[in-house]
Amino acid sequence: VTKKQYESLPFRTVYVASQGVMFLLTSIYAFIFASINRDRKDKTKHIAIGIFGLEMTIFIVLQILYPAAPIYSFGYLLGLLVINTFVVAEQKKEYRVALAEGLDREKKAQEELGATKQMAYIDSLTGAKSVHAYVEMEENIDRAISSDNISHFAVVALDLNDLKLINDKLGHDAGDQYLI
Picture 1 (cartoon, helix red, strand yellow):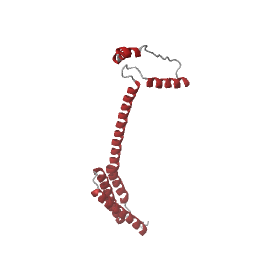
Picture 2 (cartoon, rainbow, N blue to C red):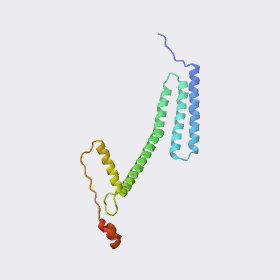
Picture 3 (cartoon, one colour):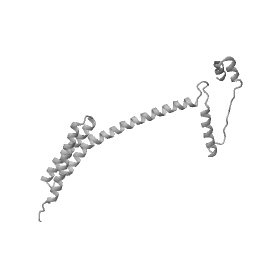
Picture 4 (spheres, one colour):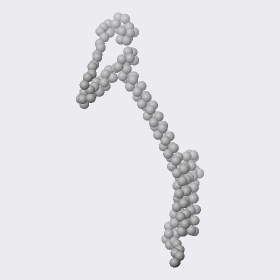
């Protein structure tokens, strides 16, 4: 039985070495960018990328020295853990914060819309529904009748006589009381 030995061809060595150079250059760039960046979050991300590149450079050198060992794969696994911990996890956290802020803004907008709708649909003096509410309700009833979703309904309309006379003779406060 002949014992076979693994031999890496020169092309593979050059290819893996060029990857090591690229990782080293990426690390240097990331560290330089982190040193001039003032934002702590971005700095942490760039340092993590720099550490990943340095770690991969070391593992690639070891892979060239020991071509039969799966060192390159271990390097990627460790590097991806670093990236996931300091970059991806931070981005997920930032996304959750932005999403929560957006939901808060949406909730406040809905509350403001509800308050505005209340002001537009309820008469402040009498507490009765306004003409805007009446028109919207009429449209909803018309749609329900058209689609056979409603078969029975009633509409009640009231009119107060002599409001102008009361306002003219007794004043607007008396007219308001009459309406109430």
